[in-house]
Amino acid sequence: MTTPRIRPATPADEPQIARVCLLTGADGGDAEGRFGDDTVLADVFALPYLHGPSCVAWVVDIGGKIGGYVVAATDTHAFQQWFTSQWWPTRGPLHTLKTPDDAWLLPEAADPTRCLSDAVADYPAHLHIDLLPELQGAGWGRRLIDTLLAQLSEQGVQGVHLVAPRANEPAQAFYPKVGFVRIGEDDKNVTYARSTTPASHTS
Image (cartoon, rainbow, N blue to C red; front, side, top):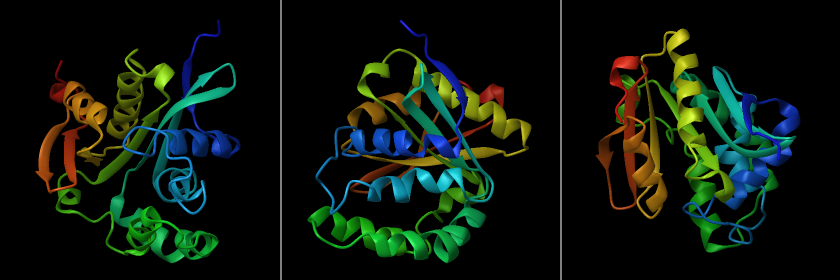
């Protein structure tokens, strides 16, 4: 059996990263058929981070198969400006409103303030992480987070945040275990954040 390894993502990984995004895109479950097409989730939450400014991305590679990834923008303001002015104008027209899920996702993607929450001031980076079921619970999520945090720390980024749906129970259990704390919440989502310094790690 091939041992998984973590490595930097490359543009050649796009199709597999998009597939992982889709298979985990329904609050951690399979989102196939939920949207008008199966590529829109990745065009919003995964693939931009292989191209945007100040972006970093790592994957779990299992003999050439991508089983998970973490992507991040180290400067959320710069990323949002780029996403709004360059990425979404070319990708957005590829997706049309066909399902109830499109009705929330497409307007959200077009919102020029989507990523600019109150968390950005103290935690300027933001991330997305997804793992296929076969890798969940085996420590690969923690390894991806640790790899990303080390890189952010080396680059002088003081903190990182993320938004997790309340309905994604595995995610709600995972983030506190890897040192993230709740800093905000509403009816649908919880915002988590943490410093990139080693002293902030918790068990």
